[in-house]
Length: 56
Image (cartoon, one colour):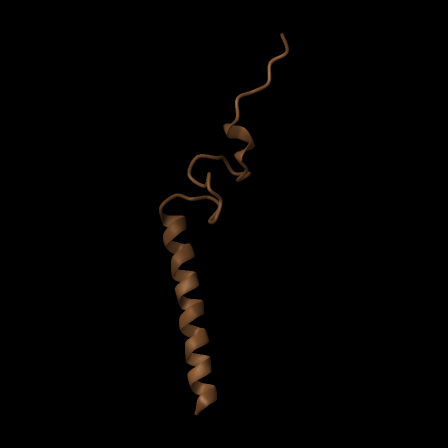
């Protein structure tokens, strides 16, 4: 009986993680967990948010 309870708990945790990821993707975040997920392109790095370097 304990095994069934542990399995149910793991299934609930996995379902919660999947639900979280799907919800984030629907909101338009390309990379879940990236602080720049809604701002960056497909590469999911904060590098494109910095000002370009110009040689003077």
